[in-house]
Length: 471
Image (tube, rainbow, N blue to C red):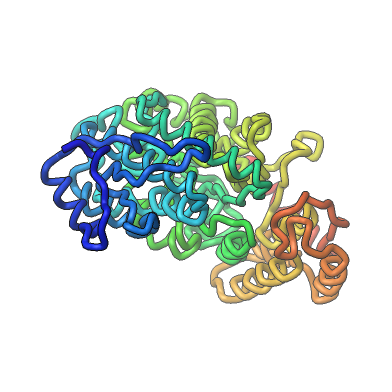
């Protein structure tokens, strides 16, 4: 019995889960919806996959049930052989949602596949004892893109459906959703691994303790009205450590829901960059043009291009640091004309004012970043106030910090007077800009808010920059 001829015509039809088990056991081939009615391109009531069913009244199965069915079908059996089946099933599902104008289901299913699918199906990577196959992978990006960047016929078909969804969103004048991409080391917390800058190079805060305000900043970014409500880690972390990062409570405590995109895939790339990695450790971060950093930057940008093709209905906020190629990757992102992206770079290496890219938001602390996001119209007064309050509390509660470290992350935070001025400016820019909870209109430049600093704070900051300029 062909799946394209299978219909559910009565109220006594099999439930989605039961049909899933039956089809999985019989290992039937999957195919997209076979036909459409004339005129409106509405899908006929045909079942096309074990995950997708059309109910008797013509109601489509919600995204949560589709996802649950996929997980139950493919848990422990995702492989190079099943990849085409999954992609074909997903293509039929998303196409049906598109024709039925089910935007919430489209967004929900894409998020679940991005954040949870790799964990829920128990994806197994084989980097330690053997190379992971080129076409193996479990999250949405890995299902579509092979490890060498190529795609399959089924993957291209799904990408075409995603592009059609984006065109429909544009035609309906639906604003692009904000999505946060973030690095880990020296971006979420300082991590001077192995006393080199292989992991990070920042000494401005105690190691492996989240920077003041970073957790609240992500929470506020997720709260924006047109937000995807989660972040994606775009990391240089080798793929061998991906399962560990996916299950990291440390990352979850900072980011909440997150997906993960790894750096170089296997041992060969790591060995090939061994000399540059050693040189990087010797120079302690002052070799930004070495092969090691170039590889990181190019890998992150390539992953970003893939991700943007999967989620063309989004605009991006990239938060990285200037220690390991994130700034270079950010410039490449900004040069990509078909994608909207805001690039924010944490300063961990001294940078001259004249060398700064005017398109990039540079920041020393997350309190400062919050105010700059207010200046460009992304944040409203309430968002900034929440980040500042959290940062001040964390500055007090974190033990073992020096005066120089506090000068970088704590002492320059806006005062109550600054916050009142910010509130006044926020009221004068009501929703319609991207801040203040409006989240959908054209970005409106606000008057720049400059936090107050006294002489002592400026002196400590200068001393810190001079002391660590060669570290």
